[in-house]
Amino acid sequence: MANWAKLQEQLTGLPVVKRAKHSIHFDKGNGEIVANFSSKPCHYQDTDGLWKPIDTKLLLLPDGFYGSPHSDVKIHKDGRVKAGGYQQKSALVAAKEGVVDGDKIVREFKFGTQYLYMKEDGFRQETVITRPPTTAEAKYLIASESGELPSKYKRSDITAVDADGAVHEFVNLGQFKKWLDAAAYPVTIDPDFSTGANADTAFYSAIPTRNYGASATLFVNPNPIFRFILSSIPAGSICNSGTLKLYQADTLSRTGSATATLYKITDANGDWIEGTQVGRTAGAGEPCYNAKEADGAGGVTTAWAGSVGLGTAGTDYVNTSLGTCSINYTASLGDEYSLTFTSAGLTVLEDWFGYATNNGLLFKVTSGIAGWCGSICSSEHATEAYRPVLSVTYTAGSTGVPKHFLHYARLRSN
Image 1 (cartoon, rainbow, N blue to C red):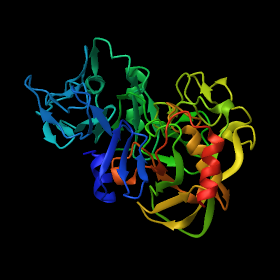
Image 2 (cartoon, rainbow, N blue to C red; image 1 turned 135 degrees about the horizontal axis):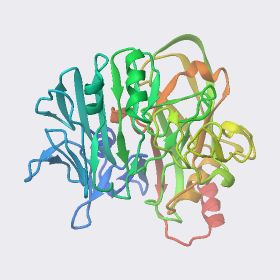
Image 3 (cartoon, helix red, strand yellow; image 1 turned 180 degrees about the vertical axis):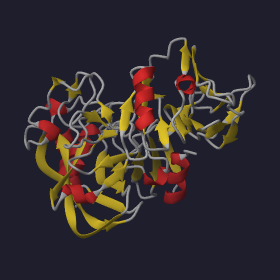
């Protein structure tokens, strides 16, 4: 179950002074405040306008569905899922009544298991099948739908991934059945929807037309990108320190290490979005290695300003290091990589205080071999403790104070 804000309280052990949609702020007791930011929503506003921690644990509702206070998504033991006036359901073959397990409902059926998850920002479904279905069985794997999905949600394409990592994007039942007949089992079918509020993704040069916005892990080859919204820190505040914490997503057993450097993405690329795919062809307007905005069919609508994969210094990203860290080629799941922001990095963060969006950050391997670094966990990762965290220590200021005075004050204090 996701309860990221509560986890930060336990780890920090300091009094909470402020909550916001993507952040939690703690009083350090010396005039400084430390704010931890998540790309995922971590708080919701209740009916009184108070921000409360999101907990995705499913609770029984009066109508027999299960839900969570932060969300309008409702899930039933019979497999129905509702959001506003929208409803979907996978009939499945000989499906049993689901069992509630924390943040999900688990349904067993004739040749597999379905998992219906409550998310911080929407809904995720996984249907795992253990053998090829017959033609009659296959049609029940695809959910029937009624009503309109609320406009705040973005739907991911229906895909299936087999045991060897092969991906099928659902177009029609005939093609789906043909692919399933040749697949390696088990196969996981995954239709989701979310608000798309979180923002981290990565690109893979070997598969340049695919988007990874909804993936739980991000390739380090060639360059993940992140956006943390710092609007909950008042404009005019002084940024005293900043740290980006990332976590290893796989196990590696090679010799050596690499150096990764953090850069600011340029204004020309600053309006990138995350996308909704899990290693599938980028949808219209979504980014991939080849494009800032793909056309939805493997082509390019808008290219990156400089070159593919944000590869051109000075054009795709500002060629000033905001911080570095070492990445080992021998690593285990959950190993932490911590990038401490330089003075140039603190200035970038400070410029983003009080604003509802920003250009975001590029994480780029600048020495060593990127491909040997494996993957890092994204904001979609099931383990909250492995999700990226931006931690910013600041001294609160007032809106409208000229920046050059703030920078002068910080230099004087050092």
